[in-house]
Length: 249
Length: 296
Image 1 (cartoon, each protein chain N blue to C red):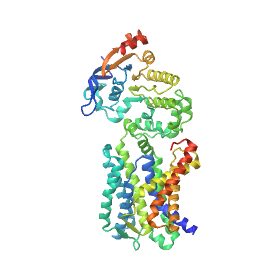
Image 2: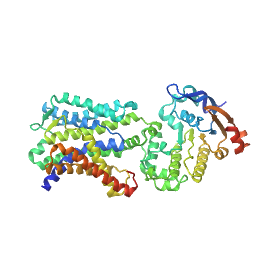
Image 3: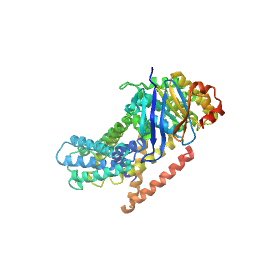
Image 4: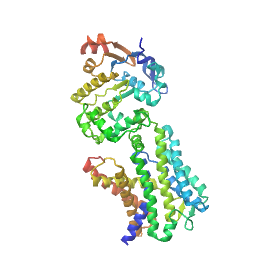
């Protein structure tokens, strides 16, 4: 039997200095290729859970395993290659004072083999071709400063750069919530496409039930830092938005 | 009189330029206000003067001054390692330490270099023009070295460190190593400027670096704003950063020498310079805000 890609075993998270418990005794497994939508009201612990998986927070108790290895045991670079995060604040995922090409170059340098020299000219051609399906304007303006892009373009670029060296796990923390409905929908379609194309495992938090219904194959609902409901692929297909609302909130 | 003023501005700009570039790299690229630079400026002058008076070759003295500058950068990066000490406070603490270290190294507050062999003394012995050409050579050499570093992939990482250190860390980059190398390099440039200044003015003084970092930051911001007005672009270019340093520093020394020529009492000098800088900056920022939508 193949081991789950990600395992959370009785994981709890408390605020520093004996503060309140944000996550409590979470036990959950994520298989390769799963697209898990995490639902829950504000303060239920959705973002904290993703921050735990991204190692921005450290669990107070319990075990977090990635491919049967403790999450904390990964060196910085292999971990960065394995897990990438996209939040609603695109400034979190981009170097905003730098150009599109410089952002790409920095990621390439981190993830390429050491001492592998990247030719600028080749890298530019590669990036232009790579960005074309995401956004033509981005592909044609590689020297444009990221700060000058619109919110939707920044988030599209952040997604494109997050998956240019496909990670094993993509964490999406309400990455479309700051965008207008049309741009959000477009970005979500792009997200679904790239996740499917690369066979990535994805965990996405959202408040949007339309999204939850149309995306992913599993649902994890949190309430007050605890698992309130889990819905698996077969059950999920049979639920509509109203039933989801009733089941998860 | 005008020729004299331009000559003074040109010569002072030449010796100050490596320090200005060091400040520009740390302030604009790494987004760190590294106060250590003024300590390293004096350190470079102090070590060069001390070793020159002890009879060492000027080249060995220069090498030691530059090495000491880079060590000062290593020291400040160790003080703020892991974000445990605020970068500004780390710089102030390092400058405190360097003030004592400089006094210990010099043995007295002032060392004269007038009768010593220096990197530029033989050129000055032939003519002033040749002497200043020689100073220009060393100054431009250090600046080109700085520009070359900024243009490399390492320079790109230093900019990324200043822009979004959290993201760079999440990408698995060794932040502390970048910070250490960045500060080592900027402080080497500061030491180079100190060493050149000591050789041109003929002495090393314990107070010669006072206020240099803040003056340099003001001058660089001024230079950048003026250049943006001319180029109508805020896009990063190594050449533009360097030219901004030249413009800012030249404007600063133009104001300083202009005030001196007006026989202003030296007590009022820094205050008037500060007010002038504020007026220049407000004007430049307001204009660029009108042109590019920057809020002030």
